[in-house]
Amino acid sequence: MSKGIWIGIVSLAVVVFGVFAVFLSADQITSGHYGLLMLALIVAAIMLGFPTAFTLMGLGMIFGFIAYQISNPGEPWANNQIFPLIVQRTFGVMNNDVLISVPLFIFMGYIIERANLIDKLFRSVQLAMKNTPGALAVATIVTCAIFATATGIVGATVTLMGLLALPAMLRAGYDVKLSAGTIAAGGCLGILIPPSVMLILYGATAGVSVPKLYAAAFFPGLMLTALYIIYVMVRAIINPKIAPKLSAEDLKTPWPEILVNLAKSFLPLALLIGFVLGSIIAAWATATEAAGIGAAGGIVLAMAYRQLTWERFKEAVFLTARASAMVCWLLVGSGVFSAAFALLGGQGLIEDWVKAMDLTPMQFMLLSQVIIFLLGWPLEWTEIIVIFMPIFLPLIAHFQIDPLFFGIMVALNLQTAFLSPPVAMAAFYLKGVAPPHVTLNQIFAGMMPFMVIQVFAMFLLYMWPEIALWLPAQQYK
Image (cartoon, rainbow, N blue to C red; front, side):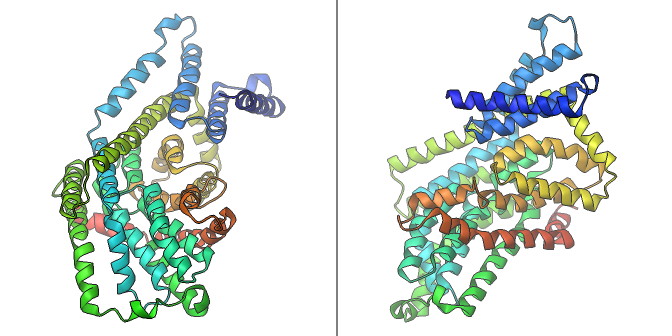
């Protein structure tokens, strides 16, 4: 690591200790305050570019060692339990049946992406929406939503739609900001719409059933997609110049031809997705079993379209292994970090502080969602889930909030993590494939209205929780 990064971390530690010294006397500083220092350091380290998983494990091991020695004075350092904890946590992640679905769903998404199935789908949906205001932007959102049900990989969706949809919209005279915002926001739907990897991680962290989470996320995902489409159509009606109609040639395409193209491009993929998600929601199969079917079905689809080559298959396997390893090591690191944080008393300190505020459940829900929203500006959703969810979960139980509902609110909230600068990974994914004249500032400006829509969707979900809870209540009585 560069010298500047180490100086930054040491400087942050000095500042935090300085705050302790100013506001607390020496006898007031407890091990819990060292836990808060640990939390501050992990956020700073991630923002400085340290790899999240190994930073979690490193800081967890260092502070866990200190915490155990504080709790057990005089104990030989070789007996420190932080070392067996790392091994046990690693074995626990490897032995978690639910997490087997992660690589299978990721592989399903990558094999469908590498088989070029989405470009045909986008063209078919585009023609089917030919008479709709803002047809290209609406087709982009619909295609993103469909692709999100085939893969929870945001980067893949944004990149692919940036290659397919952005040039088409710019050639048609669409406003750059509207085009960029539509692709970035639509590509992030995979965080919420099943089979979301984020929901699997939340389920593993919170001990919530993944099938129930998928059932609960179904209608909120549709709601958010519908709100995006309504926004685009209203903008196109108010100002047709920013979203011109399709070309005369496309408008003349006969409906029989459109329906045939839709049947070829959409129907096979829809059947696969419907069977995979339907079997989970209907409790016919576990998430892992359905993921296995989805991965096998993705291979069959790619072979049927004659797009499966050995090189594409190897690439999909490699990308799946890399993404799955990241997820699993994140969980290992978060387990070690959370254990050390709790042992230092940081968790108890935060709980006591929140309880002392004497909040109502509604006030706590509002506070927690504002914190998660703000955390989404500097951090990615993976870091928020593995670092901060273990802190929130005991408080959820205290305020008697359903962890299923809380998880869907968090998933909806974390859509903003990909759209909020300075991190805003969706913007950087899109910029990487956009034409040179499309600037980051234009992409950021285009994403802002969709962030407002996401906040509005959270308000709707909070006011009417049945949007999320009705389906799991019907399916899992």
